[in-house]
Length: 163
Image: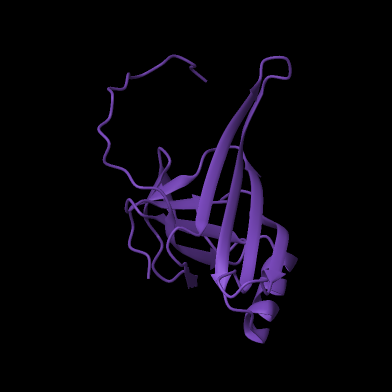
């Protein structure tokens, strides 16, 4: 594999906004038949069963960290996602248990119109779920879910239509 650089990058204007609007979950192994080229999925999403979760504004965070070791000759991406769901319900509790039992693929829709696939090769794991009632009237009553995954490649961008 060639390790030579292929391009530079200019300074970008301040046109971005943080946060996640939506996440979609898919059962691990259900993303077959996708066309992935240079880190982009351009087709194959139609017919994939996705479970959509709309998030309250500014309650989701995605961090992807590339870790490389010259000594070991390794390189991998650690993906960490945290989302907040308002309201404690039996239905959510039961569905969260299913998420924690598996290792779903997760698609993140951010506030800039990007759609990123996490856990493509190995899936994502629930690391913690905190269900809380809050103390004061203005405190969160709901769930905070944390997911992590370790992947050979960075999050894959999706340009295909997600339904």
